Image 1 (cartoon, rainbow, N blue to C red):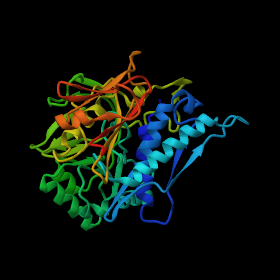
Image 2: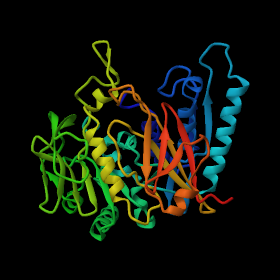
Image 3: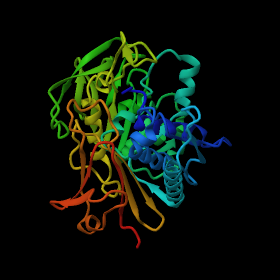
Image 4: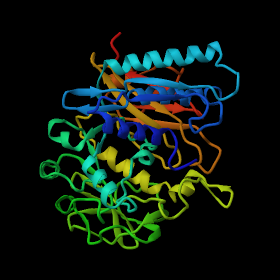
Length: 420
């Protein structure tokens, strides 16, 4: 239930490490975690299908480079946690089968669908040298990914001009070279879908913030607020008009053309201007003691760490809305706040497409119904060709849409247009 742990957080962690190391000689390995993995201390037996989701998702975590995709260089397996107890032959077979098949699939992958995280080394380098104790909300997308945003790729900001991205998510675009600044300004001006996650107070270049439609006169955020106001938008279904969050505050100003999706103490925190989404994310930094997941001996649930799930649901809905029509990432028809589904998607060189889905979350629903479903719109031909590769009767067609249904802790791999 820790905000900084969990399957989607680990996936963003892997992606950003991969981007950092992409142009070095360092080999980047993925951990296959059999006994921890933010589950019980026996993950391979108590939550094997979540482990299976992790194996497949982590090994498809791709760096997008001008010369093509760069996948993880290898894997290592943790197992030695129970004295002399070894993995059983069945455990070894489960790991070997999934690792072999996932790595083979990754080697055949030519396209990773969905939004792409964009790592800015100049921003992080400046922060580490000049303001290491400050925050500009150098924030990852791990919480947003819980609500079916298919993020399994990352790029470096200096490569933007040579990549064709469905939807880049720019992380703290500040202290950039003039070339990188112009690349981002040109993308915003072109109307291509773009997202920015950063505090307008010190985390976004002035010209980029002006073009994107959300600015602040502050140097860094300061002070905390705990209540947000929902504004009228097509993304607000099932979300209350007021909702709690943990927010480091800055006084922001949105341009007249921007649509405000929610605000905090009168300050716009999530806006959409044309096809550019700008988010001043909530955080828990400074609200709780660092590096712990309990207060006064009481475990905090994920919902308590997040304040509420609603900011992340709004961002997830907006991101899926912004994906261009020619993107092959399937969009959920409705993202329910209480029933998140982990989802990533990729395509092989033969044109076959794959959807990896999983019921991954603890501590979000405030009830015992843990079954989840994901409804996506496909063409009638694609829907009839969709095939569950792991579960029986996990997929079906309802009112022309593909419906994926998962029980507690289940995962599934679904093929579309697979060559027979």
